[in-house]
Image (cartoon, rainbow, N blue to C red; front, side):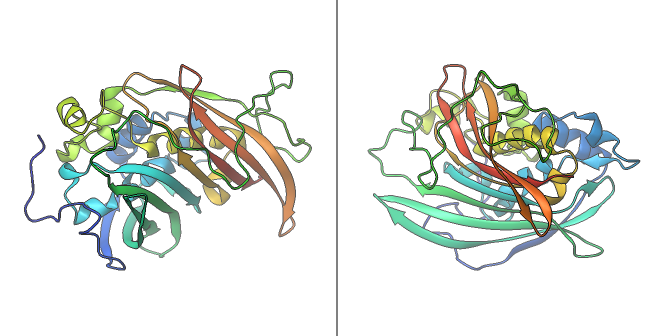
Length: 312
């Protein structure tokens, strides 16, 4: 079992305090941070490494940190929650050497069918200028009724404008965003494998976190058949697909909101897909909207939602 830190609070639904500021925590996006982040999110795109003369840190590595920012005061080795939804705004690229400040707070908690849900909001800003880099809102189940067997079921796809997950085989996939794309056009897909070493680094093994993502015994005790990837890993993979499609504009105007439908276990092969739903003008700038989803090797949808960004 994981080491219990008595100086930290137990991460339970009842222990969550609404509105309490968590942080600020300062983080340096140095070369070690870039390399570790690239490994954790499995993103080695060269345009991140050298883009327009600037060396960039994957913004999804910052998202990884923000999702776990509550662990600043809540013990990460006692977390057995289930990530349900994620919403992310990418506002500015993160340059190598940037000093960032993380802040966050729980903004809501509610109960449905015996389950206790919490909503956590956090953001990363440049320490020097205060400019917003990345912002996220995550919804998690932190109270699970004892009769519920974890890891065996699946959630319903998001209801508002439900994602159908229909892949148009007869239409060629668009490699890059442009104004002439028509609704129904697929974009280039991306396939990832949930490797245990990357899952562990993503979920804090370097900080000695022991949880359902890093330790098989903890996962089994919690009712899972194996260790599982954090839901946010899928959001990072979907984001990489969208960054390939939109380019740098994704890091400046990107928005994604998705629901996690089914657990992703160690060794699962996940394919990320997206289909254009609209091309519209927003403040005189063309914006592409898409429905996006991820499916495992058995064809089961594991995450689904929507995304949009401006065309560069």
